[in-house]
Amino acid sequence: MKPTGLPPIQGKRFDIETLQYNAVSLMKQADKGPTFLRHGGRVSYVVLAEELFDRLWPDSRRAWSVDETPYRLEQLLLEALNSSLAEHGGGEEV
Image (tube, rainbow, N blue to C red; front, side, top):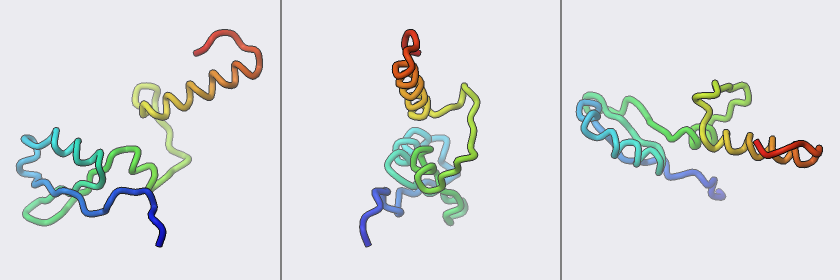
């Protein structure tokens, strides 16, 4: 099998009961790959960074409001708009 470019599936585990004390650690770990939340000693939930979730489960129908658009997608949109304006002799950059 060739590597997929995805992080390893076995990530760190956090207990839901102590989550309020570990929120920052949870976010940092989720940036590295899947992070598991335990409840009663059993894995019950998996937390993923949004970018990784999109790579694992792409959905072309997904839509965001302006306020919740992920930063990386906002940048792609602005680049595309600026490129289109430059090609068609539009005015200034967006």
